Length: 438
Image 1 (cartoon, rainbow, N blue to C red):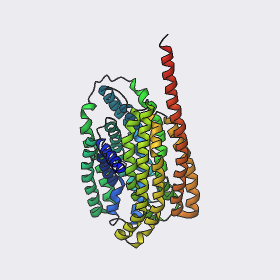
Image 2: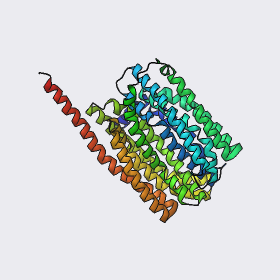
Image 3: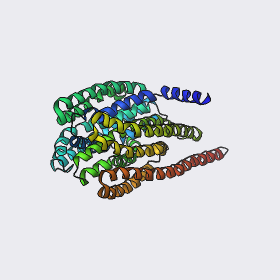
């Protein structure tokens, strides 16, 4: 009975903090970004699915570069104990700082597409000229969403996002049905731009400020943004590494399409972990000076996340392959096989996802970057070797090995970083107390 009561309490607490509202929004966003492909697989060929996933991988990296880490900086700084006016100032300055990076990213994408650098598939290079217009909207949207999360306006954000994403999903599916590959790409770009509207409406009052906003806010914002940019860029590259390397290293676009379908299902699982991260992040930042509260939040969410991820992984390894064959036919069976391997990767990531956020929460941005960089180097080498030797299956196995390596590294670094952080706070507090009598 106590276990049931504890579970009920945990669910009520999660609901009060906006967990289920944010989960629904994240699921809707996932459906728009990648999950919509589940509904259009019958409208597009496996080779077209491979090209879409390749394009989305490049766009995902471009968005990180365009946002230059300002989304994470906003989340970190606006989660701290500050006045509403100061938080709004940070948001306004951050949005202004994204203008030039977005322009440069668009220029770089256009140049790479014209030179045919994105893929051996000409279709990828041609349509990147259209999909690239989703980059500025997505980058700005990420800054606004992080601001709303930092201000704990999660329910409002989730409701607005869910409404427009449902409409957007409908538009994308219909476009793919009537106009095929091109319709899917064009609709994705249009919906990404339209998705900014509800976010802007939620923060419109905070976007109006004095023209004499102080420039001294830039160094503080950039301190967090630069390391977040580096860390997020490397982490995002790791997430798309298998698709990007397969894009260049194998000629089997149909096989890559099946592999891409498997990653879509993994993305669906990832939304649960991402939601827990989003809910816990502001609390890590807020409690970064309180060891007991910080560790309480970390242990609570980590335990909940690991148990949930384990259950999802085991269940999905049985159900997803069966569903793929049921809805798409026996020819799509390889997608289910790749998914079963990649599901292990998802579980491993869930085991350390909050530890990485905890490192970030105490301001150890450099350590987060170094963790990701080490994983990228190892993952690149392992992926190259296994793809050359074992093709698509090798890419999936390489993902599992790489994430196991990352789990070990992050667990070790998190322990050292947190002990060092809270020890330094204790020493500082002690020194202050000793100096007071003087």
